[in-house]
Image (cartoon, rainbow, N blue to C red; front, side, top):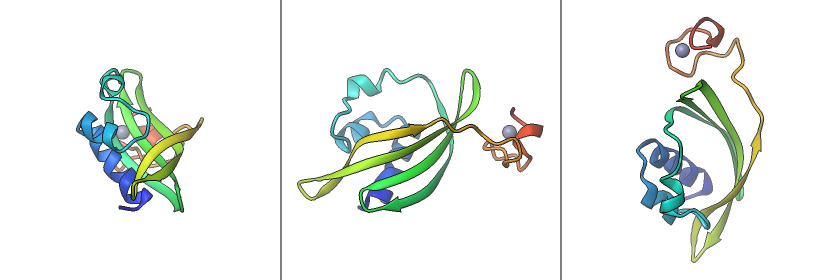
Length: 114
Ligand SMILES: [Zn+2]
C-alpha cells in the first residue's frame, strides 16, 4: 500500500471508528488515545497531493459546532516494509463560502450548512 492508499484507508477507518486498524497503521497512536476522540461524522475526503512519504488532504466533517475541514500534510515512514502514519502538519483552512457544500447537497456552502 502506498502512503496515499494508506491515508485513504485510514480516513475510512476513522469514519467507521476502527481504532485497532488506526493504531496498527500509525507509529504513535494507541487504541486508548483514539477512543477519546470527540464524536465526529466524516463527510468527504479530498487528497490534494501525494509525493513520496507525504500526503496532503482535506477531510470534511460535522461535529457539535457544525461543518469543518481538517487540512493536513501527513508524514509517513516505512517500518518493516509497510508504511505507517508518523505525524502531520495542520493548516488553518476554512470551508470557502462558494465551495460546494461538503454535506453533498449540491448547493454552495454559503447557501447550505454554514
Ligand atoms: Zn450542506
